[in-house]
Length: 225
Image 1 (cartoon, helix red, strand yellow):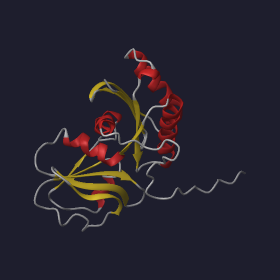
Image 2: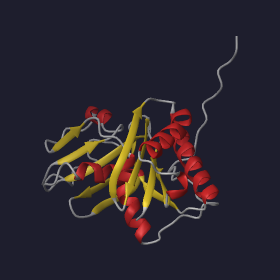
Image 3: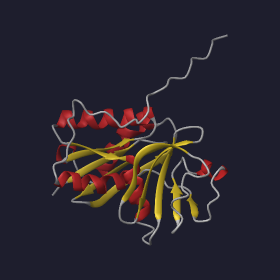
């Protein structure tokens, strides 16, 4: 029996899930910005306490590896690495966009294109593109333009995630459908983590870093009056 604790902090949503042999046992999520560092340890503790599982009984820790918010990814990775190192447990990383894709595919099971999008400011978004059987575009930053999806018109194209809404300004294709309130969630990270666990596809805890996709750019400090 494998107990996997999964962490998701790539966007403003902070969530934790516990899976037992691939079966979702518990999950908690909070849609609060800039709260990950204070909430994450508490959510992990509550999920395990409510399920009557000790930290020592966890078999692996999984983390959403990005792309996403630099700060959020750092918090999730640091927490997962710390737990894995301290307890000598495997560390599993899961692509954030692939977890989002899985989440929508559980809802929409008809032929379609799926494009999870994470906001990267201005008209840029981190995304992948897939249909019901395969990935067409691997993870990449996309500057959205009117012709970004003109090759994909033969079936519905679903855009979702916090980077999708702004594309309504420039995209006019009739087959595009926007779906609101689809976020990265730890319960989907855990499903993908189970497969990696079975294949012993683990990260090197000492050297693992999140998948930022772009370099962090610090904002200039405000002048003090």
